Image (spheres, rainbow, N blue to C red):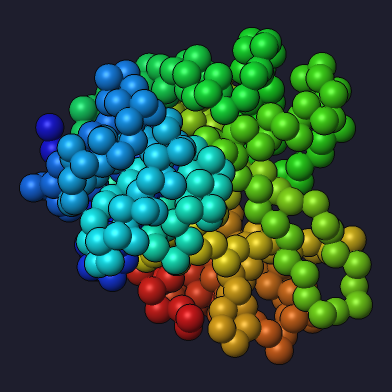
Length: 393
């Protein structure tokens, strides 16, 4: 089984020398454990999903830490959140860096525990599924439809799994295990339907009432379930961009999945040939691009600086990246042929935010293109990371 090198590795190793604790969160099966164990092969390792280890940590946290000692990787820390308080005491007593590596797959619970007990003592990193760059190291011959259909979970590539089977198993396991840990959801079949409805709204403004009507649950329940999906790294809300301008801007976030392959599966796409004429191919392509930019930020140990722009007249840019001295604007188009219409959103944005724009990027699905047209840089997803590295800030 081949192991795909992860871009976050150098940041993990570097920050471990600067902090007593480094915490890596991300979806299940995104590669957190593999990354940590490859980065620190000589460290002790304990997984709190294992009942015996979890029971030991729950019943005798001081004894647990004493037995495992320094330079230990503690996997799935959210399973014993109270252990973090004892970690704080151990860290303060030792008074040095490079003690523990923690992982967690429920971001809100992990973040809450850390903010209460390990503030200032831990670096917080996020590992999402593979980026396009990482996937290409494994298989350079992939086409755009492969990326959309397979998604980016490492096991699909490491073990050459059938995407439909693997993503189906992932989703069923997620519902049966993680959802029960996070929330007391009684009607799991209705929750599963709800997640599929969310997939069909990928790239759209989040409309709680519409989801409520279609799922047959209250808007309050919809809001709670969205939070559950965010907590377990299934989907995320992209906030709108607010500028100091007079035009009325949309204030509702948009909905995206961390993994576009999982969104495909939930939409019922079970063969990549279906993507060619699928009505939501454009939304899936947009999801891929937005997630790639987010991965680029996280893989470089940075926080999200991403928004979208949309005003009351429907003028929209898919992605706004906040920079130190302005913004970068990105637009995603799933067509493989360049069209003049692709550049219209940039023209509209210049009318409103010209003084703030530092870079404009069009990401489309074609291969044959100039480096720039009408002042807009052009790339496809295979070239996107290289282009992002050249952006200011």
